Length: 375
Length: 52
Image 1: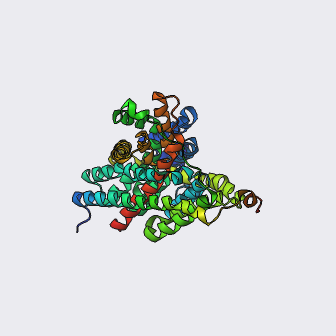
Image 2: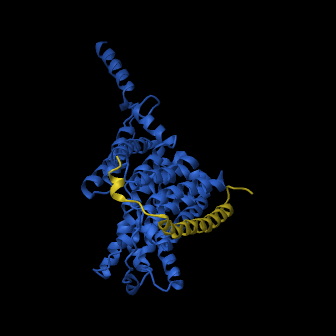
């Protein structure tokens, strides 16, 4: 009698804890979260992002935790993403730490920022062929823009339920770009092409640096309102940096604001990685399409640079084309490293930053046009 | 036109790709024009740095 009552009591207590709702999917996703943290610690892959996402993913897969439910802190972090507040704030910080000089100094290379985005459309069409809706396909396609905040922004506008898969795919492939891009770049170029040296760039004056964010802010708001919040904040951050009289604000945007936003953003992304939502067939398809997008984006950028060389008197190094895929400054660094392997004195980094920064605009333009055509 | 089709996805991609090229070329033209601003005068970086 006593034992029966005790058993009943403990049974009832257990049913009120998360233990009763634990299933293998939770175990798998906790393992995914732990792997993310280990990748950040051991391989140094995007530690600022993966530690927060990994931890939040682990906690979100512990049944019983109400952090992700309305009233929970993780839920409110997600609200920041859902209300599209966090991605523009990331761009604000990025703008405050970015030198747009290489892009201003060599305007002809900005075209590579659009050429390297064929991957977006390959993934979009691929997703549609796999049965995703056109809105989901659009959000999946933008993974090929290799721009985390833009991918999140577009996903929240087009297919919010795919946020965990798309953000994880985008950030994972950005971290893996040094492995994904070089084989494609070598396949599409000859050693002679990779050894082309670029001419020294001109110096960009302070007047140009100050005028740039103001002019671009006006143009983007005029022509592409759907993505204006992102580019506007990018330009505001950059204006704080370039006017030299708001050094405190520029530093705050690049450090304090950026750090706080990264913490909230990573918590928000990880909190959406519940096993019931993440462990689906579409996750594998999205991960595959993301890889396809990165490969085609890199390839189309290199081919775009080679097409430009048909018309240019002074040839450009086609490796610069691969940097047009955005993901600042990872893609520029990859172009630089691949060039160094064939000529140890060919320093491409500064030149590659031009198309790399143009890639941010290229992704924003593609996203803005897509939103305008779809909505 | 029905939006949720492969045909529309292809059309969207083609239009988006070429329109992006066109718009980014426009940004290229703006960048090409920026140096002309230098004819208006120049900013004294030292005094700007002392400005706060």
